[in-house]
Image (tube, rainbow, N blue to C red; front, side, top):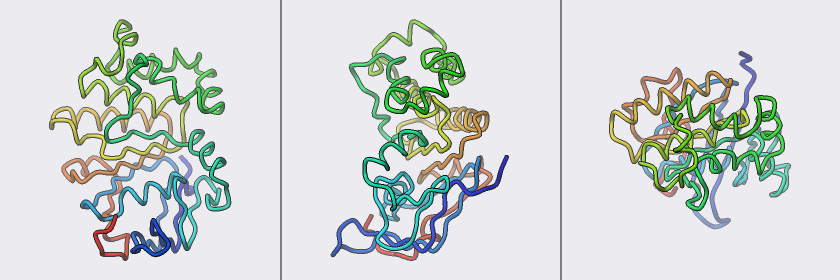
Length: 236
């Protein structure tokens, strides 16, 4: 595994509006390829803002954010959207599954938005076959379940569908934003184990953001956002 940085932040300062309070002041953050990073912090510490910068949803007012060697601020908004679709898989806190699509259609959706991920899935046998493989690995192998609407599933099942959608097409970076907040302890442990195993198999860099520090021991690298961020106000 190469230790070349996948994500680099240097001298980054950010606020959501020109006259608003500073939200982030991060002197440095470097995440090597394939690393699994647990990022913790209380509400208001800037976790969501940091993820927005890393994913190119927002750009810093000062400093640089580089992902896979690209300076995101040098890309236009549409270019950043394409870059994110190609290189990022995101597991949202509320999963964001589309209720009118089946489980299988939800998982393959990422390949519809990204030709790059569609091509990678094709090399693995096609988007549908790769989606089915991921669902099996995430303990959702029943093909009858794949045809059901995503909203007919339990919370734990929906979460694993969201993880399969993030992983399909082998994105280089997987971001999990408070993905276990709706789960009980047993399901949290199982989900984290499955997610880390799949990211390791794909060589993906994982950034797992949570306020639940009981999960931190599973990760080889742990960081507290208040220690990275010189802004101490609760304005996130």
